[in-house]
Amino acid sequence: MTDFFSPRRKTIACAVFAALTLAGQAWASAEHMIVAMPQLPQIIEPQGKNHNPLERVAYSIYETLIRADQKTGELYPGLAESWTRISPETVEFKLRHGVKFQDGTDFTADDVVFSFGPERFLADDAPGRPAAQEFLGGLKEVTKVDDYTVRVTMKAPDPLIERRFAARMSEIISEDGWKAAGGWDEWIKKPIGTGPYKIVSFKVGNRLELERFDGYWGDKAPAAKLTFVEVPELSSRVAGLRSGEFDLITEVPPDQVKPLSRDGKIDVVGGPIDNIYSMVFDTKSSKLMANKQLRQAILHAINRDLLADSLFGGKTKAANSVQSPTFGELFIKELDQKLYDPKKARELVKASGYKGEPLVWRIQAGYYTQELTVTQAIAAMLKAVGINTKIEVKENWSQIEAAGPERMINNASLSAYFPDPASQLWRRMKPNAFWDKNGYFEHTPEYQKFGELGVILETTIDPAKRKEAWKGMLEVFAQDPLACPIYSLPMIYAKQKNVIWEPGTQGLLDLSARNLKFK
Image (cartoon, rainbow, N blue to C red; front, side, top):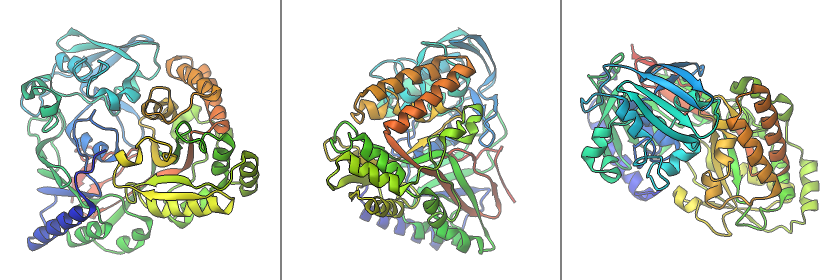
């Protein structure tokens, strides 16, 4: 990611914004809802980037063919009224009539075909492909049957087609809007969807202003205006919430839960989501990180329960594997046992031949809640078993992910965008996904085995075979870990009491009429 503003400029911008808003009176929430976030996305095209800030805002602007309930995962009609499995590779969607894009044009099958076509995604050099490939790389084609019927065909049998087209990267955009803009570079400045809010203006590093889309096919948006503002400093977000200038703030650390909860006008909501906060290892660039026993030692050195209890006040839970209970029958309980064993960690360090060299650990201090504090706590735990680290704080993802022998460890989240392991560990770690494509992973026999089993998981309809393959993947991953799970990522929010809203199991913000109203 590119950081367009230095920390100093961001701080000044926040101070100016606070001064201007405090000079006036707070807006009535139903008329103008304001959400304060530490970071806004640099791009608001849904296939532009896979990261938390874009995920939060995209749900208000765009929609998918199928809608997944953000609390239960249950599937409902979205832009498609119904869908039918034609074969293990193909699903046919009957599209909703009478839907308008935010520029007033009609939504038809042509828009669905275009959204996944070669100009935006399917071609190898398409601009949306780098971010969306992890999600939709198995897509073969989307074809038009008639103006309100499309067929989605995958390259191989896929048990998860319906889930994929209810998740991130499958948002539908306007073909006419893209062509009127003249292509990606102009389109991304003000893209067009079918969601309940439309874009009014976007200032990178500052604010994204939306307004209610009166032509929306569903229940009208609860807020007449919806603004997302970038406020990096927690103290500024909290002050704005207390003063009534902000209606909702994100990334609330646990030590603020009690103080904010004591405020009679504020509620604190949220907790762990289907996302595993992890350390990711570059096993290809660094000879140190290529050592399996050293990486195994890191897994056993971390007291995850202590982190969850002391740094997050019980607002999250330890992750001993990259799994979520929402996987149902595919949650392998016997492979989710506690990893913390400092004695075993010391033995592995000794067996690895490690000589005490510092392991470079790149982070952004505030991208994840408590990131710097958590990193420092884990570094102390690693030190206790004989592993030295060198923490380097970077300004943006481009610096963190810059290739070279100094790229050894970075923090990352492994989000399950739908309740299936193919959407989480496999999506992030599979061959030719982002990390592998960018040179993180050595193609060892274990990684090749992981890939073979992952193909079975992703392309087999038989539930028993999928479970067997997934179990094998977890076993291989334990022997040759490419990442270290730490805890379920907590998403804690604070809001005005007159804002009736609940977070779901994902990082997105559902601010539609289904999940938002005002007292």
